Length: 237
Image (cartoon, rainbow, N blue to C red; front, side):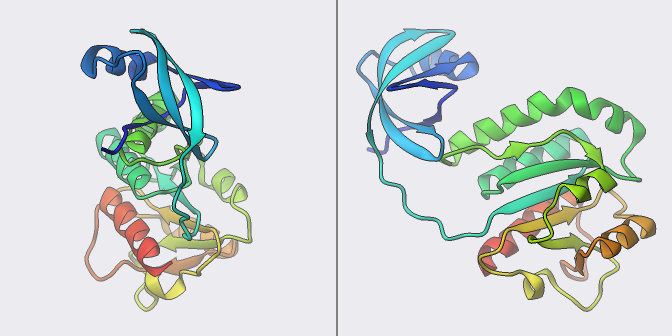
């Protein structure tokens, strides 16, 4: 039987701890027992963890043998995602995490509603919790980084020029995403808000050396575009 996997909240030497909701779920829902074993992920490695103590706010485990991990020869993906309605934005975070993105950088764009922009900082911990839970569900060895929300110009400055940098644009007619994805190179995808990127934002991308690409002739919602673009990159690389 496949052992359930958890991402450790704390690790010290040969001991790991699950705290907060993880501990509560283990204690109340799964009714974990002392001596029971789980896979514990930490620092991109997996080790067998044996439950030593159980409380509703803390479960401690003794770490044992390392579990072999199948190598994943896929490119690192950073998702530069313009902030849009929070329920759909959070769905995009969850699914992007399941698809294996390395980093999500929320962006305050010209068309991001003002109340969403002002509230973004308060949602950061919630977004990280969503990514953490989705990482455990999808059996990742580590959760993606969820960065602070910043304006577009600041976001572009954070992306190395060595990355393959692609902005998805409804105005692009001739170049598709699959045509410009590079293998074995970190990839950054930029997904705009409802209504898309403005002309001056697309100009800023072009001046910063980004490549514009299309997801096809249909107009996709922002969260759909995010998931479709990651899936295409995964298929190509």
